[in-house]
Length: 577
Image (cartoon, rainbow, N blue to C red; front, side):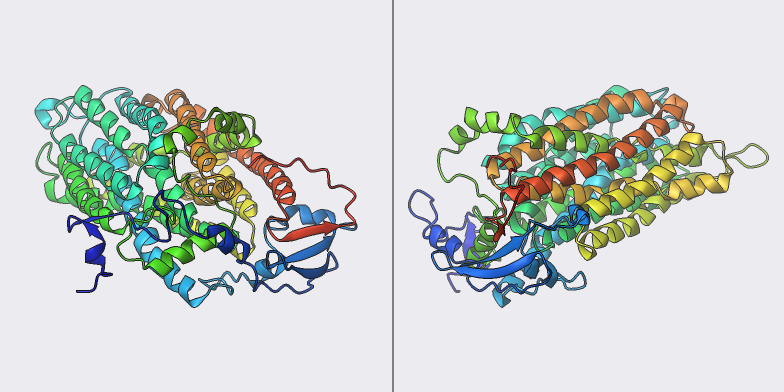
């Protein structure tokens, strides 16, 4: 058997080990400076508009610079998101209907294809089962958890549902703080599958709880083990895929499909279970947790072998040495920093790093942006499902019961799946992440406002509910945007990614407890009014982020291969790296 087969790349014959490629005994990369200097030697740019004067090859580095005159720059160029991020040739070569960029080599296309299978597709499946284990609480609630104990339930009453969801979120938020270091220092190809298996076992054990207190304790622990999931996969995607060529937004969108699939199939699975066990008291909701947990355990075990780590610290048994080298070159070309090779602990807790983070606009602006994103939806509260449950026939009996009720909860996430694809395609087709966010949130604002008004014909409410998942459709674009904004320093990117998520979820915990009390279902006046306001602010804040992002990219234009001439306003504030 060849020494370079996947089986030979595993420790003890079953666990993937770190791949050593072009590194010295201290783990430092060999000749990476020379590689980074020659990356753009073959780039060719042509004159595309009046702003671009000439392209010139810098012989010292081999980089072809694009020279621009911005004297008569039109006002509408403010909305050109990639104006300073990439050279005109790279931007114009991006075709939304091409999966690969025109500049990708044969080796890079092979690498990207492998990553799409190993990382992108697996992250979709992992997010699917993760969300099965998250939203099954609402389905379990509909399937009989509020029933008295002698009828097979656990006697959930009053605000027990929203309180249990809040306790889950508290576990998620608290343990993201130590995970901020784990995501930076430890191999995610080990950490993520182990955490997946842990919360999956707890999901199975949820079927055995006897009262609300036990349920809340188990859900807290599930939140603990799920704490790093969301940000970890966004970090992995940003470590392998390039933002400048549109790769990252597409893959973040594909990853996010898993969330919608989780919500959608959870209703379908729960409906099927309800039809099978509906006649046996207390069995439907218990089997919902058992089946979801078993599926998650299987996916977690697969994760040990398909999660590739990062280009700098690769654990993949399927990538060749040349593909790992190509991955590193690609990310250097995109100005993406790597994790320090030594003194990892010391460099992470370097006070200069934290001073830089807390003195930058990134921390404050992006955290507030994320707060608006996390609080613009009614989906997490189960508002749509509780509205369906409240509908009655002419004789006053419930209109939807059993499996029919569970299956109808899949309507809005199935539409959301379509919205997600359209929003991510828009971001790539029109080279406008900010535009995709704004348009999706205008539609979300429309639905939220209609539900806040509430006194509308039932058909109008159905229409408003069908717009519900435009709220989450912008999330992959927002997180991909964040990864691009904070790409220069690996440490800062990881800290900012986790910290903005922690802050947003912390706000979401107390806000959701205030505006989504279960006893106010399905009207939720406070809830729908609040998310309408947050959606509006998300739109406004996105424009601010666009302005600050363009200012940053203009300051780093030379690193992006762009030099300005005859510039009368070159007084931009250079953000720290």
